[in-house]
Length: 206
Image 1: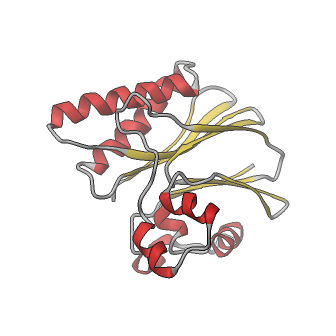
Image 2 (image 1 turned 90 degrees about the vertical axis):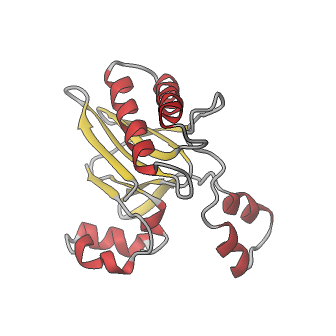
């Protein structure tokens, strides 16, 4: 499993929740996802901005890439920094953050992927979805232009946040997943055989 999860307090009323997914097809995805996750913990616990923490993660990936002697190494990231009832959502790649309010989906991050870019222009065939389904257009790879998108949200009591890698939502409908989580009926261990890829999630109910 090349996913790496973070769910930790940073202060009295702040916390960081994050899923990083090492990129398939590249070297050492499990190492890349851990570097990215730990870099955000290091940076944000020291009051860095999201942008500076992203640069920290990118620099650390670049160093590790050289140490390992590999051509490419990288990871997606999807995270939520919660301070009081304010949330900063950030992401790169196709790991996602969802926000639900009153049992309705209020927000979903937009994938950085070939599939998403093409689907904005035209309807895609099944063959195209199969061909381009795992090609992402952004990640943390140790490049100078590595960046994340961000979104600021004001949370309310009763809100639910779901952070997950693409291996989860590709094989498990989100509506079904969130319903079973609410009712405490979701048993990922029993459903593992039904998944075809790494799959991880963090569920937060405020």
